[in-house]
Image (cartoon, rainbow, N blue to C red; front, side, top):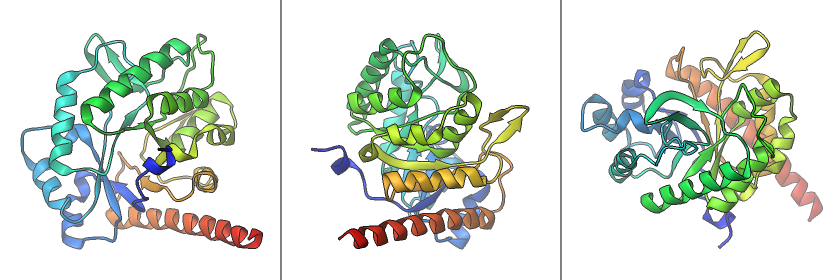
Length: 288
């Protein structure tokens, strides 16, 4: 079976589920295609988050997105975390589960940040084995997301995009490609983001993320607190030309606006995608 045949059909255009929008989603039922939930927010026994999640999932397809798997850590995999993750998945039946290509702590201390890895053969073997173990435990393939970064390791002997491709192929996992993270890292480390996109295996790209960021002097910080900027929209269009129709999500984690503002931004993503796909279809017809 090829990697492409394992991809789920595109869900369309979605938003990250945030507390500020719980009631509006239930009262107004906006025409959203799907929602992404932060796994850790709902890995609890009960309470208001699960109450709303159970009601909202009756109206929208869901996917789960985690920030604490710490797939690159030298610590053993957290079995308690994995059990809770699997329990939540059994409860809400997400279309897929994702997390980040990073480490978040050592010696069982979570520092609640997404730290990049050294891109070495040793790290590659380590991450591949851990992803395979997680997938075996969950009984499904997971999506691995590229992170934004603000430093590099002198020990690295391959590029980030070469490493990410190798991870996906050797672990037989799928990819969540964060377009903003590529842009942020490209600016911070002075590489061509198109080189990054060109290196990724299109048949493993299951989802795309779009977000805003902030400037901190000469460095760009991935803050998810602002609208998507034009260069990221342009990079998104380039990704669609390479990967085709891919489930697309806009993330906003701070300075969260009212739902209609995010819906307008999502409509812009849809318009870009429709334009790219129309141009691609026209080019195919001319060649036929």
